[in-house]
Length: 81
Image 1 (cartoon, rainbow, N blue to C red):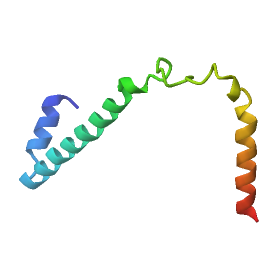
Image 2: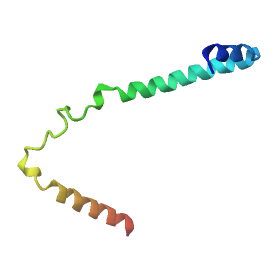
Image 3: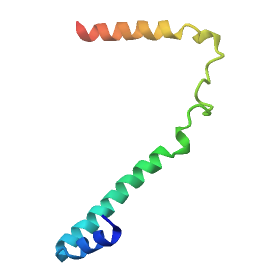
């Protein structure tokens, strides 16, 4: 369908239906504007974020995975009792 055909179809609709089409277009613009803004956010660049890996040089956290696992096991087993 060409743009002219689409315009002709739109103009052939009753006024209330034209308002609904206009409202729907506004809704779609708002919805996809938010999606585009989220996907293009500079804050989502985690690779270059200084917060990521900030504790990588701490020796006291070298075995943090084992500690986290033991806390999880302890807490999760309490909920099953």
